[in-house]
Length: 36
Image 1 (tube, rainbow, N blue to C red):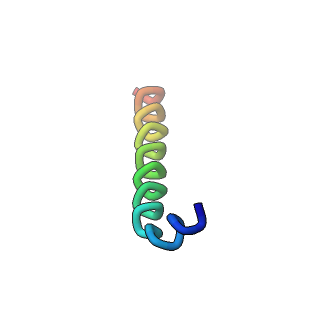
Image 2 (image 1 turned 90 degrees about the vertical axis):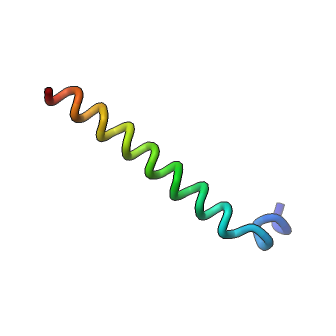
């Protein structure tokens, strides 16, 4: 596991940022649906 973390840090960072953006978009969509 440590080997993969050392070899592929950009992939993990991209995955984490993509997941964060996806969650934020879901929250924003729910917020807009509740307001309208």
